[in-house]
Length: 101
Image (cartoon, one colour):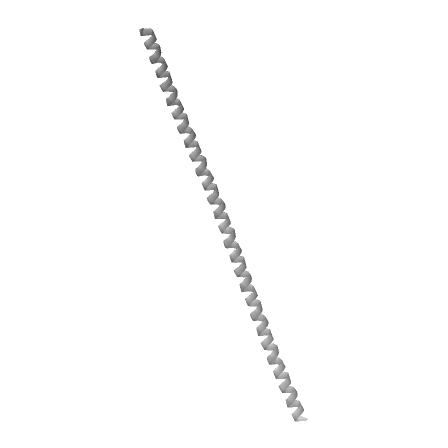
């Protein structure tokens, strides 16, 4: 009878031990899953930040391009005005020559 009692106690102890180990394992697995989920979220956040930076850079490039185009147009306008002034000057010179003749 005592031998059977001790055997049952040993089985009970070993069952408790197995339960403790499996609980510990479950806790470890959950912690690992949470850590990898956090890492995935960080990776997504880095990707979103990179995208935002990329969009900002593209917008800056567009702004710079528009400024270059504006400057070019302005310079062409000045060049056209200068050419117009020269043409007027030539015309009035021709007119003076004609009047002088």
